[in-house]
Length: 317
Ligand code: PEP
Ligand code: MG
Image (cartoon, rainbow, N blue to C red; front, side, top):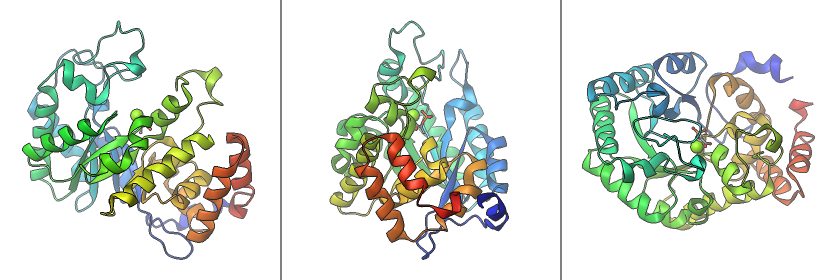
């Protein structure tokens, strides 16, 4: 069973035939990072920097930011750490950036868009990330949340370059970015699928509403198709730029297999999911994962996709 194999997890994600899939952690600060490193994460695939400053009325100082980021980098010396710029808004309000009176906050000024209403904060954050990176052996990548257009990706990349950050990327969590992935990736070095928001925006279902939970499943074939299109766009772009997943989908072992079968390069998740995802991934070959991904894509519903994949993974029986 999955549980009996947890002890064997050595931190390296790979399929039964040796295809490597680095398993990374989603963290909200230094404490999480220490737990993630102990759980075997090979790096951080998503540092939610807004978690470091939730509820703040004022922008954190550069010094405070540098210390917060350094705490995470220190836990992952020599490893990759993907720092996401502030994703304020909707379910994660930061009073110094977001307007609590917006009628539709999920469709409002959130994530990268706060740079339009509160200019300067993003530049100062990138400078703080660059300072923290300069004093660390971690390999620091930076990405912006809620990118919807090619121009936004291009502008974010130039802001990163101005700050001396050499590996800019974007989250793909708005369907428009998934549809335009080839063109978005022409301007950045990598993409990371935020399946929580990608599902919410694809299905037009608030991710926080219990009654909509069935719609809000990353097993929805429409969501899987957009994930496949994002990878296909990266392939078409021609430089082999990696597409990872950092939404909760990566923490579902059966869905993780589907994601790898769709061509996803890295999976980032809550640290407590690492061992189970590692074990299930090790139980299939890459060809089997691809076949399961095709099965899920062809399914008539989220429930059918999930059932047909799970029933073909003996380790989950
Ligand atoms: C996502 O949307 O899938 C994601 C990883 O970002 P967050 O959950 O922080 O919005
Ligand atoms: Mg998101």
